[in-house]
Picture 1 (spheres, rainbow, N blue to C red):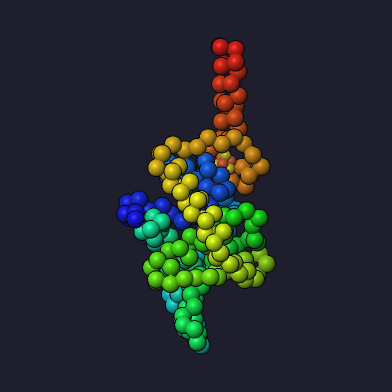
Picture 2 (picture 1 turned 90 degrees about the vertical axis):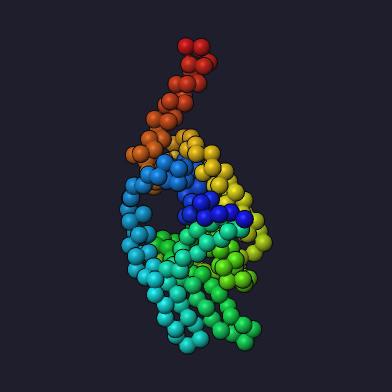
Length: 207
Ligand code: SF4
């Protein structure tokens, strides 16, 4: 069990999957810079995370629910959690809103699964399914929270914790991802590459 001092933000998982250096810059060095993609996301979440709830029929919808897990040392917020009364009992489903479209990597799914791990601990329940609402395609996509996704997410949580505990921002060279990264001007990935190339040459020729 972790204490609140050890909690890591759930969004650190996505930052880590996108780029371990980005995760380190944000969650160790505490830096942030917006770009078009992050502003789009912020605008969407401002509309959704309203700290309100409503009941329609047999579904209660809670928005902006704060969540945590002492078992996994996580803290964050759910955009939406739906509580539905069924004949088998209460069905609980987090729904995460995304401005874009489904991603090929696991980052969004890991975020959703981490939310599920928190909700299961807080509400003493088991959640089989969760969902995304993607603004670009205006559609809800359901995700099975199966054993494989749970294992992958727990591995990522452990990797993120290890980076944050080390207090060392990982060094990652320039890649295609950098073009879409809001931290590119802070990170200076090409300068990192040059430094490393220069270091390699220096070591090679004992300069
Ligand atoms: S600019 Fe590139 S290397 Fe730097 S944090 Fe962003 S994605 Fe990672």
